Image (cartoon, rainbow, N blue to C red):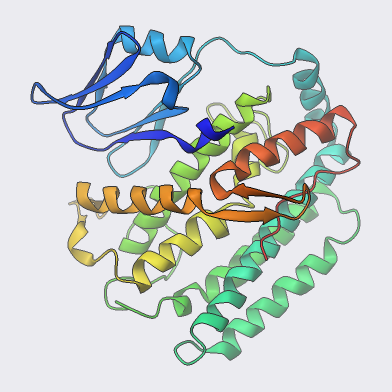
Length: 343
């Protein structure tokens, strides 16, 4: 399980990765910058102009180390994996449930309950941490609306209704997101969510964090034999990892949104690390990406008490634990999928 905590992120432009026996070698301008034993890793993520040798790809495939390629500012391009493994019966059950709208609605409802609960916790923690610096009345109002929407999810709902509730909740949550920023307000602000491309510093930071969370969730799903492409809340679309997008919904608030706010409010990132291209897209420089990745890895090492399995686990293992619980639900061992709800 702990291999899920070990992901190698390569952000230096022009880096070249190759194989030396059972090790990954990272070279920049011909100079060896890093040597990492393959057995220490669960994934390798390459940002921008980073290339890999064919023997290294073969080694990663053999050892089930996911190799992902992203743009310099974090847009996902491709993922290289070895042969599909896992229980074929589990995947067939996943496909059957995905074709059943009622079963899909039940799973989507559980996922959205987790997302809304965790979004509400982000708001409530912000009021606790910064009571004198944020408009608590507006945030309390948004929190109450999220609670009301959670109440609607307390009983069965059609899939389109679940999607509508999720959309309403996102609007309420992001309507007060700007209030959660208490430092560097001239450089980091939230007006609306912009993705491809991100059009301001905060959206660039959020997109980058969402991408690496998605990578970890996809790796966790594949590790238990599930198909990341076939989702329930996010329906099938060529090239879209529907189940990975589903499962990461409950992790966005605590593993990405909360971390982004902490980095800004603690002034661990600044406007100097962001640049706007001629097209209007905002990108982070190499130093900012390193800062964010270090903070993300440190966050993954933090211990929490999982409310369902009643065990202490690292944050970084949450996607794996939830993937196991999801597989148990599909096998019939659990009546419903229990999302992770952050307290």
